[in-house]
Every structure is written in structure tokens, then in C-alpha cells.
Length: 401
Image 1: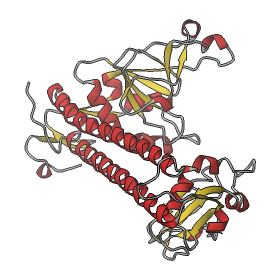
Image 2 (image 1 turned 180 degrees about the vertical axis):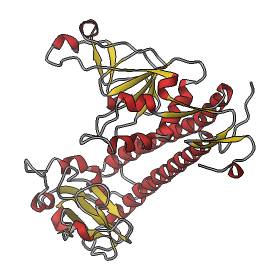
Image 3 (image 1 turned 120 degrees about the vertical axis):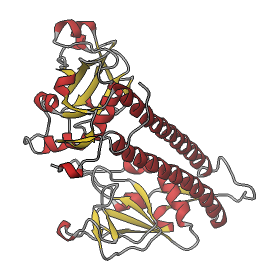
Image 4 (image 1 turned 135 degrees about the horizontal axis):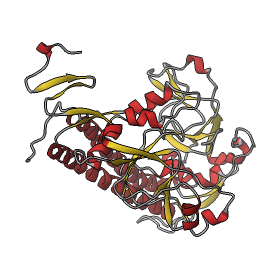
């Protein structure tokens, strides 16, 4: 606890730190009534078939305003169970459904029912707005995860955890201004997300047309040849490393069966600018292009273009056919893709000059998407920084009464 000499004028010490004098510390149970939902029996078709009433599950929560649910229930389900319809403006919190789902939240933008994995918070005071509450819950989401991790064999949070959860409550006008400022960042983030989706769709359409010869770049008219991948590239399987020798902060990533690195090493076995395809696991068939040296693990294939073949063009060709490559997986336990099946893939291949031209166009499109994603991450970091400052009173906003 801070001493009096550490507390600036106009501030006070609380269990959540030093906060503005006019702010209060309360619990969710003091500002809201907490309810839970239920799941109607799926054995009764009358509960779900042709349902019209939105029914929210953990996976529906979007950390914003919820206006759509994957499933709907019927009036019969509503009348035959303990389900309750919650009004637009109700704040929802995920109590379980997987560790990464715990603490997810949304404000209902529609009237809806909820399942038993969610808590519904109905404000019982006019001293707080649902939007400020949403931002507070998002800011403190890691606290929920700590509750869950320290509790039970199957991580979850309880209704008691929810009611006891602390919240800082500024004056109402300041809450609204804070929500307004953070809402501006949300709008910018959503705009950037839509831009990335648009760029991605445009790139995929361009890739499909260029790599099928439906669209030819100016100056090219030579016929394409059908060739097997193992005739134009060298396919190698990586070398397995023990998990015990992996680091979290070494120089070179270890690429294995997943989409992200398995860890890091201080040595590498594969040069930069190499195509990789996940050999095994749930992500087998995933195609990537490594721009830095890396360690190719036991569940990783590397693809190296032979002379007269453009590596980037082959990457774009394989990426364009990623779904088909994933369909080559075999095995009922840990799925994998056989190297012979990969090598037998046939594609129409243009001349080296046209390969290079196609690769340049598609790589430029990839770079545009990459820059847009970098901007999105900057916006998200800025929002996280603002939340940390505004929701704790470290930085104040000007507001009217």
C-alpha cells in the first residue's frame, strides 16, 4: 500500500492502486444482478428446429456488441426450460468453455437467451454504463484467467468469482467520455479489419486468375507445361528436436507441425526464403514462406525450387492450393501428409520469366496485406495502452457534467 507521501493531491490509495479521489471501487455484485443460462436438451428436436430466438454460446462472444448468434432456439424450448430472454444492453461474460475463452465478453445488441457457460450482468444502478463496464472487463481479462487457472482441474470461473470481481467506477460523465475515446479506437480497428479482409479477397481472386492462366500479364503468351512438384523442386523432411532443448527467446524459430513456431534455437538447419509445409498434426498441409533462417523440425517439409523455377511463384501456387494439400492428410490418430503424395501434385507451370512476373505481382499484394496488418496491431497496442491509462485514472479525460 502506498504511503501518504506517495499519493498525489486529488488521489487516494485503494486495493486496486492509486485512483482519483472521486472514483469509487466496487464489485460487480454491487452494480449488477448476475444470472446464468442453460442449454436445452439437443435430444428434443422441438427445442432447436426452426428456432427464432437467439441463443448465445461462448464462441459467439466478440468482445464488442453482439448482434448475431450461431444457433437459435424455439418458443417451446423457452417455455419448457429455465431459459430467460435478456434484453439488449445486457453484458455477458464467459465463465468456461476453454481457457482461452474464459473472460470473453459482449454487450447484447439484440434480445437473446444464453447457455450455462455464460453470466449475464444486468446493471442495477444508473451510476455506471454498460460500455464502460465492457471496457473494464476487457482490460481485466487476464485477471479472470488467473482466477480460472488457480481454481480447479477444469479451469473456469464461478458466479461467486463474478460477483466479487472488483471494478473502478468514475463519475458517470467521465465513464461516457472514456467509452467515447476508446470507441474511436474500436472504430479505427474495425475499419482496418474490413480493409484487410478486402485486400485478402482481392489477392485470392488475383492469385486464382494468374496461376490458372485465366489472366495473363502483358508480354506473355508462351504455353504452360504440366509438371509434378517433385520434378521442379526438392522436398525434404526436417529433423526432430527434443522439446527440452527449445528456448522461448533464442534467435531461430523451430518450424514443426503447427502454424506458429514450436520454440526457438540458437542454430538453424534451413536457409531463409524457403517454402514450408506442415507434415503432421491438426495443421498439416499449412503452407508458409520463411524469410529468415530457421530449424526445420520433424513434422515440417521444406520445398526448394530447382534451377529454372521461381521459388516465390511455387510458394504462391502451393498456397493457392492449400485446401487441396490439406485434404491429402491420412491417419486416424495424428494426421500427416506423405511426401510421395506431395511430390505427385501436378500443376501448370509457365516460363521462368512469367513465373517471376507473377511472383512479383502477388508478393506486392502480400506486402500490402502485411503492412495493413502491422497498422492493425499498432492500433490494438494503442488501444491497450489507452485502456491502461484511462481505466485506472492515470490519465484523465475532460468531460462536462
